[in-house]
Length: 195
Image (cartoon, rainbow, N blue to C red):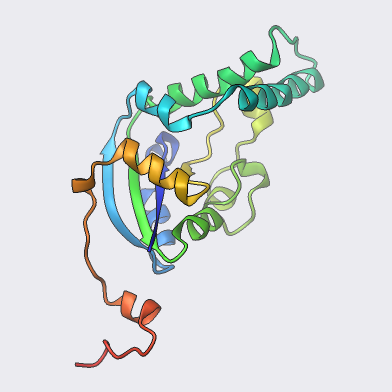
């Protein structure tokens, strides 16, 4: 069993979308093993995003391009615009409550990522959480000087999920239990169904 880490961000909480988002995961057969409703601390968010100089430079270059295309002045180096992305994310993530969760199941990280959709709502596929439930874009958020409001965070890779889970949850927060649907999904002979 693989675990994925997910956060419903402040915009998802404020728009009353927690139930809809949870339902989308639950109906696939994935299992929730931990929930935590909290207002995150800035330090935890910085550790969570875990970005390096290369990332700051690459993302900052995209912002410079967007600002130039919008006829806006470029007032600092690309790397500083890149750092602003995480500053804006931390400000956004600490602005109100979030729902953090751990989801478990076969290839949970890939399944969750598919359901969530691409990071930018504008280009997320129809049928995904971001594609169906919000409409923000990188360009609008960059020219507005704020984080993209995309409802949800999910881990990109299993190793990243484990790192993020360790930041947000203690081992004792994770509940180990069985649900009958696991027999249907994972029991090869289905011999655990009938009594």
